[in-house]
Image (tube, rainbow over all chains, first blue to last red; front, side):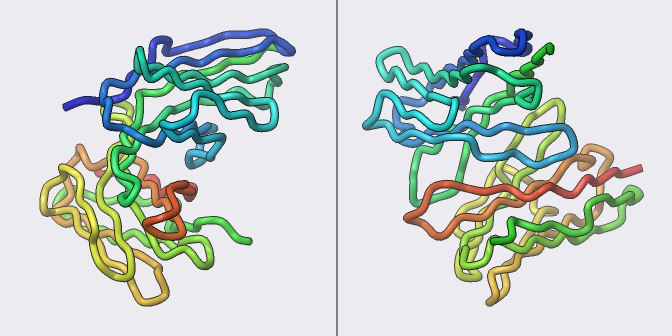
Length: 113
Length: 113
């Protein structure tokens, strides 16, 4: 079946750099997307979400961009900090009435001081 | 407001046994979903409960079951455990069908020997 995939399994950056984590999705019917951060030994932590009727959404130090034409989602983290080191997952939901999130495989972000 | 809690945090079982995991959602949240996370398959949806009713189910065998109580707490049960059931089991809650953001608990780490 269709699934969400990630281009890069590991991203290494220096502290203070901006990070960009990418995600490709294949289901054009998906109408809701979420980014989660998962630290070792913890459950996924909600970062930011975006609906399909939006192209961009900003949070604190994070921005999510959605390009429906090429079915691409990205998470931008400004001024990356060592505490941002974690695995980042994108997830999509086809039907907002249900909680059936389809997750990508994840990208490991490593931030060096 | 307290987050999603899961008990126990760690479990070791042997093949053929059964196990019950518990999840308490965020106060006021009525929807609870369960996910299985493994290194090979990533995060996969198990099922969702809302108002004590299973609303949706993922592609898992019948050995995996769940229920929800009137206070929205949920349990999932896995019978006749197999080695491949070793995983991190995550519970997520949201307010209801019209509220899309799911918040995850820390998970229960199950090891089947």
